[in-house]
Image 1 (cartoon, helix red, strand yellow):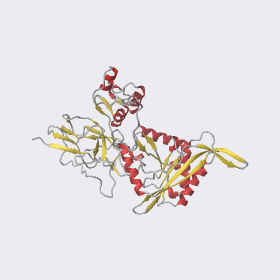
Image 2: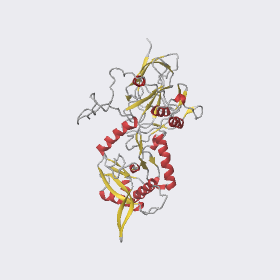
Image 3: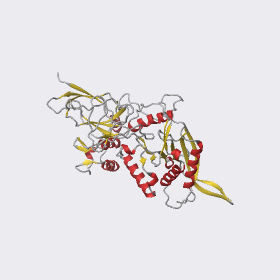
Image 4: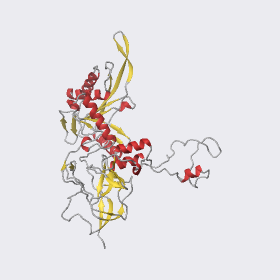
Length: 456
């Protein structure tokens, strides 16, 4: 009887309990060789390509695209082919079901080779380092960047992240003209094809639509929605308490981890919020609102270092930071990302704008490295670019403060001799009251208001 091997989903280095299947590169009955691409999995940070742990025939695959697989459970099963390359017995990866207590998980440097585990342990690399970070609303703890390579599936060369984007935008990769080196389809190729509508997935009419187009009745049992009742009268709405229709949607990837992080933060922080309006009437033309907010936060951090800090609630220790790294909240359809604007305290206005634009672009195409998604010292949410005046943003440990800027408006301001109309920006400052006093938070907010009142 041929030997079989069960392959368990490894810990992909995100510190998360599960991952979502994006695309299988094989099907049941196929023969795959050791370390060839097996499946791409989406985690809270990236789409990671998982290699085959052995050579042999695929006997079973545990789910399809979109299914959530728990770390450590069976992902695939193989029938070992002794005539093909196998990992030597002495080539033990040393995997386990998580990093040793008190130690960070290893993080591969760029170019590190990913080695598959068959016991649900950590995927290890030839080179590793530890650097854990927290991400507001998106990442809990993560400390590695996976080196991804374009794989050829169905005659199309593309990175796993590009395939995930194409699936999301309903773009047929076989109809996209590649512009990357060696005929690789890039993110930009997919976006352009989606915008032009030249590579839409086959949109053959469904039986119901085809029947309607042909003037025939829909198949029995297919419910037809209509604003009229059977008697021709307007349909009544459902009474309060009636069960909602539709199917529950399982959270995946970034949004799934965002839910975990928010719940964890809610249980660990003692939040208090102060709010005020920044008068920007004196601003000269050309001021960039986000850049000015960043500068105001930097100057407030220098004036009141207590809010530019990390706090450990278990040991009751506080770390004040001499530098200012600001987590910039970026809202996407997949969930909330918070990349770190590093060294904001030494950047000029042009440098701040360039750095923000780069981070937003990397978040949009999911190319941002894991090292950019954590380790910041304070956070900024500029939600006012959409709507809203004041907020109570969530502080995610180990940070102790987050600034939120609302939608700018004009209001009447009493001045000597009368009343003027000034433009103001609503500010909300939420801080962990275990680590900061109300006086420190108020002085921090005052420093921001003073800086924002300057003409430039």
